[in-house]
Length: 569
Image (cartoon, rainbow, N blue to C red; front, side):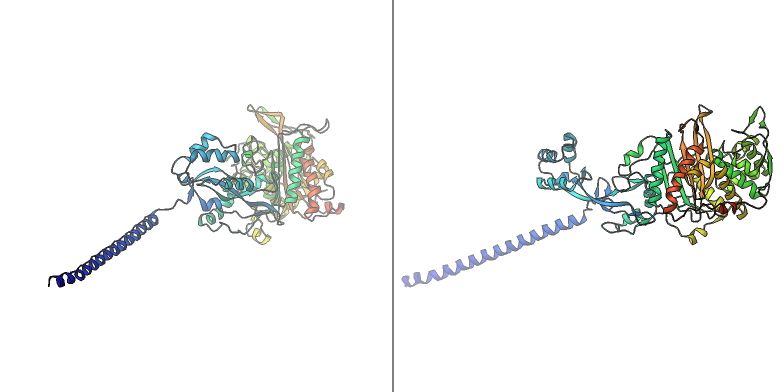
């Protein structure tokens, strides 16, 4: 019995062992499940944490969408590219991902040695998300840096503005900063319109925007820029500037001012005297303002083209006497007052009109406010609100007030287009749109008389040197030589010269103002009067540009005779 009992015991022990192993297995499974659940919980918690973190979408405070956004191409009126975007790589770092700062510094300087070692070490140290290291690099530099294999170093592709014409239209286009934002010229104006909004919304990133078409004709722009540069050399002037616009639509065909700058290097705009003299400069216009005075007097009915004026003696104001530069000192007809540029005769014409109506006419022509125009570089003119007797007298021949060349160009356009003030523009504008903006400032008959006077001055007066340069293109205009104020007094040795013109005067299409600042005499005969510098520059520009603009030469004297008003002999 004892043996049988011993033989019965083992099955009971084996069954207990199985139960123990089963319990252990179940415990292990439970621990495994717990571990898996805990792992998923930790991962889920981390994902939730990461989801709650706002990602760093900026580089040193600048939104990456803005940095990578494109700007629309800028085209001239014929489709020629004036400004385009090119894609360039820029190097940045994520300091919190840098493993070995010193190694990164040494490796980067083998490819980009101009990076300052201390500066670079400071940039790579810390926990910032993004810092710029070097912007606008070449693709070859990008490839060499990438081969270094430095963690936390990467590139972003930026848009860089490129101006194929270099300096030729710099004052029209302006420039952009390193973040591709407009800082001057039409580029800045565009940002104030819709480009900035597109960038902010991210719609411009990687997308081709509709090109912006300007009114500028780069053929005419090239000629004007070239001739202004030549004028600075030829007449040893400190500056020169010019603007040409369509008299019917107000479209600016060419606008240049030298010294200028290279918009591909925006820092060059900081060079002294490289500002835009057409819009951001105001000057005493001198005798080109006599056209304004005569226009107002004719339109008011106070005088007529057939009237005569006593220019035998100077006009006295107290102890001062205003005389003519090369006076005839006789009775002058109104056309003679104009072609001989008589100060005395012009004062008599203004006085016939009256100083209060004359001052009101200056407001009508917009001389006491900024010209409505797209360029942000503008200055407010200085025209006295009220004119004394002597103030009105000096203003009548362009002294004692200062306006921009743009003011004068817009005024001359109205003088020859039938009497309509047209706001100028740098964008393409058709005639229908322009006509909706017309503001009548003169009667058509006054405009006809002014066209005759301007052509007469080219044929027989101070514009004759200009006319020799542009024979056949029926150009007419007025010279202006304004003495500059030096130490509170007018200086006869430092002058600013102007020539305001329009062509062809038998069917006016374009108005132009050319300025040459502080010219020297080209030869003993010429002196420094405007006819010999600003006038001849005008003639050379017209001679080259007119055929480009579809104006054929015509030497028929009948065209000039047809401009003469009735009653003028």
